Image (tube, rainbow, N blue to C red; front, side, top):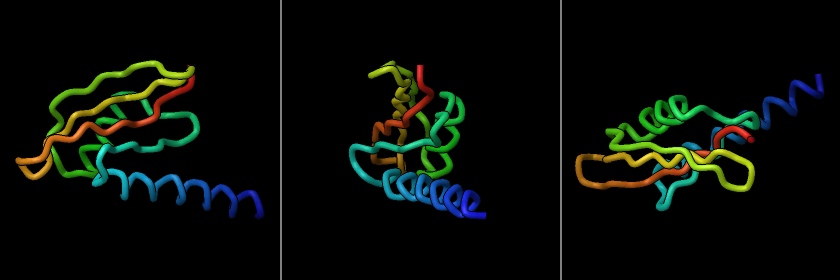
Length: 88
């Protein structure tokens, strides 16, 4: 039971930065501990921002993938949002 509560807190806590950071500049989204693939990260950014994805690429930094996703928001703002990916 305690483990389920802790797990729920961790999952809920990880989702909060996604909501806030999608509108922050520069954006950094924190994914779950095992990380997201590039396609999962793209879909999450698209849903969170409601914008149009312009480009996406993955770089490895410090033994972890970092996805850089450029998104057009409200047909006027271009932002690059970073999403932590999988560990390498």
